[in-house]
Length: 265
Image (cartoon, rainbow, N blue to C red; front, side):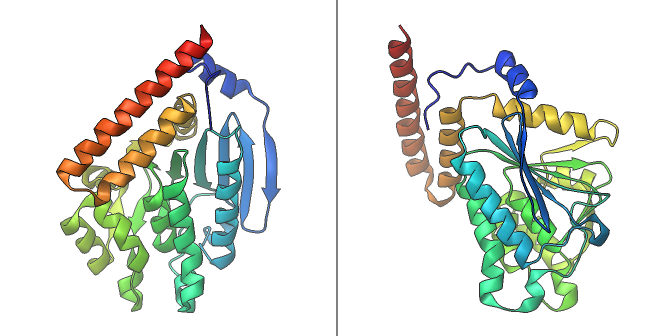
């Protein structure tokens, strides 16, 4: 996964914007393509508000695996067609089957393990499995009309897998409030408590999302991969061990940079 010949910065960002794209697949539940160095997976059942069911989760995992293996992909964008990112409140959790639930769990793990940044661009309703999918992503960009909800408790079930990520994202008190009440959260509140990274106006949403993801894609591939790996590795480390790991990673990154510089002379 080398990037010795990659020039980062505005020039690369412009080149990515002009790069030809290709459609990878149009499966029943997902539209997948690669444009401008960005792997794009879009939930494609707007007439049903893009529910997350078993087949959707399978298609998402396959798309993520393809994006990881493709050297042309430098960042990933997950979005939803229509007015809602994923507004269905009944999804694959209703099957009460451990293997079916694992299909979504594998998507969450794949996002975390992907060496490339994964951005969720969400609008309208972001509920249940859709809220879990967004929470799993590295960056969440919300349109100003987005509403988030984890309503499983109201249906007599539990957002079991999502709680792991939710606690890390918003902290214990906010997370428990959200899953125990099942209440809805506006985009503004979601940003305030740390559930989303940025909130954008409806008018600027599409263009700003593109600009943000292109910016992520323009960075060093190795640098981004190392940043993401270390960022999530810190979860299980003590403060001292986390500092030690940071020192080691920093030294390795500088060594790679010096090696590339020497090779270019």
